[in-house]
Structure formats: C-alpha cells, structure tokens
Length: 473
Image (cartoon, rainbow, N blue to C red; front, side):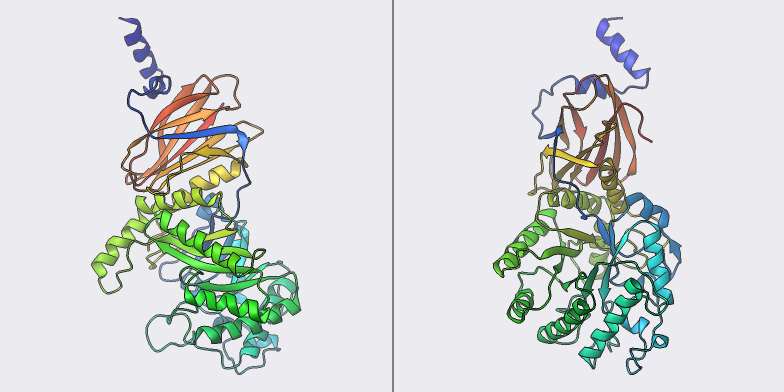
C-alpha cells in the first residue's frame, strides 16, 4: 500500500474524518474566507439575545419551556403579549380589572397570575423588561387597547404595579426590575385606538409618575411598530425633547426579509435619535424577526412566509443579525418571540416542539458562556453571511458561530489564528439546517495554533465549531 493511501486508511479507521487533510491543504479553488484571531479580544457580549415571552405557556396546549430557556438563557424577557403566552397576566386590565375601583386599595389588584408568570422567568435566570399596557388585540370591537378614560389614574395604577414588584407593596416583592416600557406600538390600530399625540401625553404622565416614585428606574418607549425614523417616531422624539419628558431608553420594532435590511433600519434609527440630541439615551429593538411577507389576506402565502421564519432560513437570519449587532451602537435587542404555540412567530409549535431559530439562540449562548468575544472578519451583510467568535481565557476553548442566510457560496475557508493550545486540539462541529437541529456533524484533530479549514455552509445554514483540548459535551 502506498504511503498516501495508508494515511487515508489510518485516518478513516481511527474515527478522524478526511476533513483533516482538507485542513492541512489549501484549496485549489479560492473560497470566501472567515478569520478568527483568538488572541485579539473584542468588546463584551451585550444583551442582544433577549426575548419576548417567558417559559410558562398556559394558552391552548399547556407547556413548560424552562429546560429550553436554561439552554439559551436570555438575559432579559420582555412581557409584551404575555396573556397570549400565560393567560390572565401582565396587561393592565388583567391586574386591575375594574378601572372605576380605588387604585390605592391593594384588594382591587389581581397580582397572583402575573406573580407566578414572573417567577417562572426569574427561575431560569433571566431579568424582566416590563411592558406596561395591553397586548395586541385583533378583531372588532376593541376592548382593552382603547385610551384610558383617565390618564393620571392609569399612571397611578402603573406606579402601584412598580411598587408591588420593587417595593413589596400589596404582598409584593423587591425584585429591582429596572426597565419599564410604556405601551406597545401606539402607531398600530390593533394596539392603540388613539392618536400619536394622545399616546405622547399618556407616556409623559406615566413617565413622570414613575420617576417620582424611583428616579433610578429606566423608563422608555414608544415600542414603535417599525423604525424610529418614521414620522410617528419623530413625533415622539420631538415631543419628549420639547417637553423635557423623562426618557431613559427609546424602543422600536423591526421585521424584515433580510438581516441587512434590519441593520439598515437600526442604523438609520440610531442616526435619527442622535439628530434629536438623545445621545446618552439607551436604545432597544424590543421586537425583531424575519418576515418575508405578512400576506394578511392570503393564508397560503402567509403560511409559506412564516414557515421560512420558523425554519432554517429563520435560524440563519437570527445568527446573522446577532453577528452584525456585535459592533453596533444598539444597547439591546429582543427576539419575538420565545414562546409560539398558535402564534406564527415563536420558538415552539403548538405541540411544544422547538423550531429551528431556537437552536440558533442555544448556539449563540454557547459563545456567551465562553466569556470573551474575539476579533473576526468575514461578515457580508449583502448576502447575510455572519460570524461570531469567543474564547474561554482559562481553558482556551474557542468557538466560532457561522451563518449563511442567502449567499450563493456553499463552502468557506475558516482561518484560525493564535489558538491558545500548545499541543493538538479537537475540532467539533454542529449543524443547523433543514435536516439538523444543532446536531453533531463532524470532528477532526488539529496540530497547530494557526491553520485553516474548509467548512460547508450553504444557504440557510448555521454551523457552530468548537476548538478544545477535550471533547465538548
């Protein structure tokens, strides 16, 4: 047997794939490249992997998603649309059902269901981003998203909710919830039946009351449907500036057909915020996801659109967005949503089975757990190609998360530099695509701190790669 044939035979029969040869040989065809420098540290990970919706689901088929939440560990959970996740919770009319009652009497509040819902969030290690207001309400007539009959009283009710969760009022808690978002999507008729001007007045009254209660609270809005540079977004910014309204953070939502479109919306929104002089105000996209088309009047086309959101295209979209946001000025982002059920947008189907994007968040959390983000190149926003790298500075374990949303290339060259290993290391790869849900794909051994490997990364694919001295569990 010739030497080369013997080496291949040995590799194949010792459990090491033929990819090792590929790692030691430069392809004759020039491939698009990623680079990772494990010795060049970047800014820390931020709360970009926060979500809407908690682990408790009690609408329709009841599920407990806690074990999954413990796997993708969102830093914060936003409480919008909570009653479609855990019924009877969070919304003002659920907590204070009789608006004509005395708002200063604790017996007129129904906190128990919301208490239990928030406990389920805290139990999995997430903090709370509290949306004060009402969930989306489709159909007619509208029962709960109408203007409160008394803005000042509504603001006092909100103040008592804060007192319950932060100051122990009404047999409450001292949870120190920082973020309080006032209402949701006041520019949509399914969320607010008043004008933008009326919303601004409600925001002002509530924000002033909350800051009087506790100046350390983070109060903000408007949780706009769409980018903040839109006319109604500008109306809100102008109102807050002219009236010197308390504004600790500005929030808006983004649903787009590509990662690049979402990032362009974010960048233009951030520029608009700066234009209005709110340079020191925190900024959050409190809802984001991939939607190729809402197709409200065509159920079959809507099904096709949202099947992509739930499938491998949506998984690649999520990773690419998380990759691009690493170096943005955005302070945080909240994926919509982490529940699902009968909702078109979510991590789980009606049976509680995870959809593909949930595995993208598990993969991303693997990097966050390593602790230190490292320098990378290779992002291509035009085609949705993304890369994130991280290292554990104690163990040396390094991970790379790659995504291809819609690039025509199917193979990429990954160049690794300065890996913190003196001896051989193990390269282990996991895959998300139509047929894999973050499952083991291949393994190979490397013998250098600097090397390159070719990776298979066709359209709508996510690949998580570990470099370690020991097998990754």
